[in-house]
Length: 300
Image (tube, rainbow, N blue to C red; front, side, top):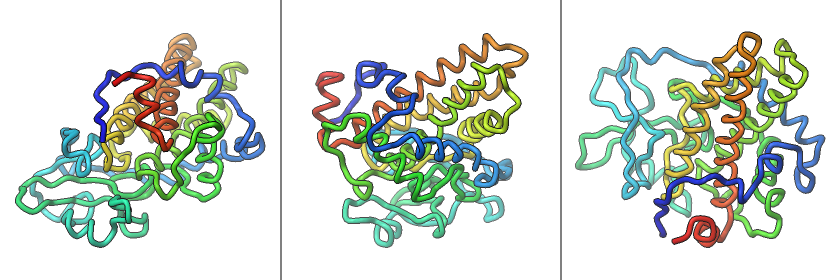
């Protein structure tokens, strides 16, 4: 597998902001897009934040050579009492035997508590990792976003055939957990950005849709919101881009547009850019000729 260590560049050569952040024809029709915008408002009921002060956690160091086991969206922790633990204790071998699919990806359903404290034979390290295909609250294992089949039916075509219909893509079953989670999360973020733009144009920051959009960005940016652990080399780069995007989303949500409209507008531009960069990479990684397309964009 080719390793991709090139510096992250802007994806405007692949998709313009207008192409990704405005309604498109093709596989995702306008009605479905508007209906899916309601997913940005489901965050209040889908997310249940909890206090993590009883457990000492920190971001795990990412090593591309160990991409199948760890990533920057897992947390490393030392030994602690059962009280306040995050995740269920498991060994990597147990998870591979029980939950690995025919591609070797560990996929734990939401109902089976996807956040695990994973130990490996011969190592004292314990990694807290999310093995679902959704961004979840690490304390509860509950997705921070809608996880409906309807969302998948709208979002997956949007990030594949709608953007580049001439390209061949993997199936939903073949996508990594992180790619699936990004399909859901980025589709909702796109709706939230469009709703935010409407609020800016109308100078109306009191609507429920604007409030829901800011709530989504705040939730996505929280430390407790954990994306799936990387199980493929390219997942690591996708994680880095997503982390950059959600950091800016959090900064956007922290600005009161009524008090400082100029600062809000400037941060909104950054939020669009980072979201677009992540969406562009996601489209490439979901294609069957991902290595060829990456080389065309970045060189060998």
